[in-house]
Image (tube, rainbow, N blue to C red; front, side, top):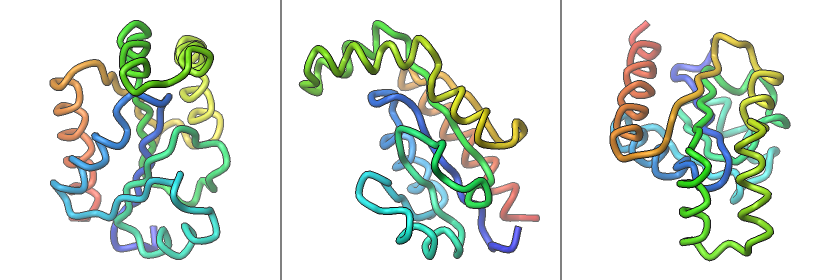
Length: 148
């Protein structure tokens, strides 16, 4: 790894807690947060070359493998995911599509097909306790990598 700090991709179906998890991770370790929905890949290349970036996006199959040192896929119980998306005001069709995506583990499959198995972590994201545990794991991993 030529970067001084690792890059982390946090992915999952909409409503699994990606943005909240990323915000807590960057608050703990001072990395930069990039919500890919607000960027394009060309702009990301320069930012990711420096390292120390936590990327938030609902997919992962179009990112080059060289960009990331850890890929975290957040998974949420289907009924809970349905409720979260409904509270966000998603149309019924979109809720159904996203819940089906979660049931079929589309994002997990994308991650395991796109990246080395050893850098992909699939973590539950059903509760505040899950989120706290996930943030602790990601932060501990990043601190260990940064100290090497």
